[in-house]
Image (cartoon, rainbow, N blue to C red; front, side, top):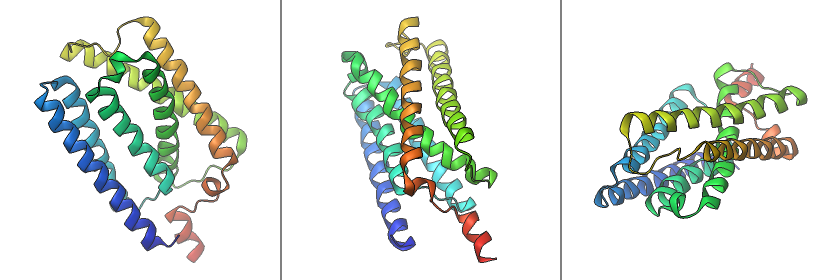
Length: 203
């Protein structure tokens, strides 16, 4: 895939995501579901900020990782919050935690390497790093849910019980294991050239 083709596809995916998020935010506003609307707006702002940083720092991530990361956010905001699957289906909550952690772990794994301008190649360190990232993301997410519950007092609590929180963390660990296994057996991910590597090779 040429760089031009990849850039074009990235722009299309980003634009589709932004449109879907705006529609979701408007729909939540019409339903007067301001708690979920705030979260959906926060997720949209998060990705717009990343797009700006990506452009300014000349970062690049595999198209697949970009796609699943945005899908995980869309599944969270549209299916989980707007269609209320988090409340009506405990199974969906578990599956979303697995998929979301899997996607975001791979995303941040690639972002951190570019931020540090260091490619992690040691297999054992990669295993430890990816699993640690997954557990850290899961813990941070649970802390944010706790803060959300305590500060904004939503009608539907993010953390209804200790059991729910623990099951979420177990699901996050499973998602991290999937992320590590996918990275380990994916030649495309392991051989992905970061922009800083390309600049080094030109010199």
